[in-house]
Length: 147
Image (cartoon, rainbow, N blue to C red; front, side, top):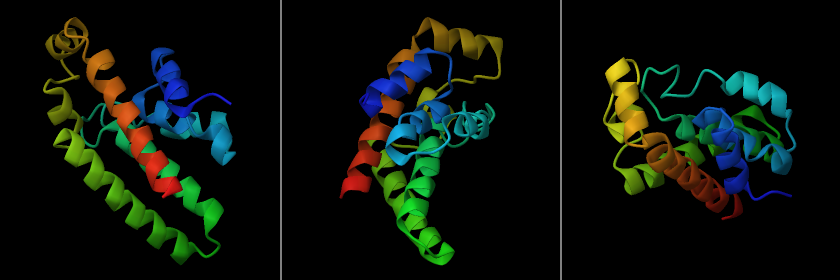
């Protein structure tokens, strides 16, 4: 089985967005429909539809935690409580590492303007920053799910 970080980075470099890439990394381990998950998460890149709100690596991680807890807990209330607690802990750890979970803050440019897109490309932000966020999201997820 492919290592989740390698699987996620490969997906990201193959034109999946950051949310899809994090989610894809766990499709084998959590045994969910990969294609359906890629469809569901397709609008979450660029901070949710390129709104540059919550980072796609973070929202992808939230989806992973939801699936993880659905497999683990039988009642919906139990699933929600465990998922909310894990999301809050994930969010705390991600912010501790990066100072924010907000895409526009993390990238410090607008992906909605040609100038911002050019800045991101010219400064390799997708490779240097986004891939780091994806890697860290997976590291945090693996720790939360095995801890």
